[in-house]
Amino acid sequence: MPSPFPGMNPYLEDSAYWSSVHHWLITEIARLLNQQLAPKYVVAVEVRIYETSGEKSTLIGIPDN
Image (cartoon, rainbow, N blue to C red):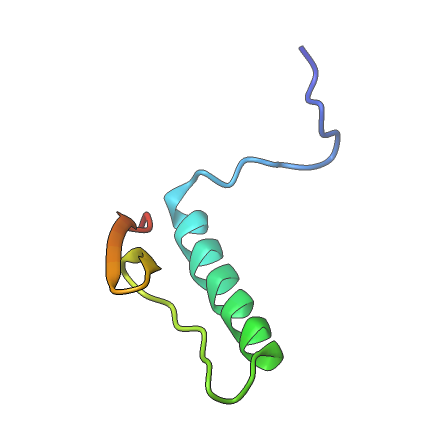
């Protein structure tokens, strides 16, 4: 079966490449979001993701490395 992406390699699973892509993508997203927020808010790249409702925080997950 021929590649559905002629002339391209869409597979970024190689850990030599993917870990860097993930890091730079999340950093750039945080930078762009911070530009859009009011001064009292900040986007931070964290190790754990929580959902907060009132006084209650629930661990949603830990980002892949």
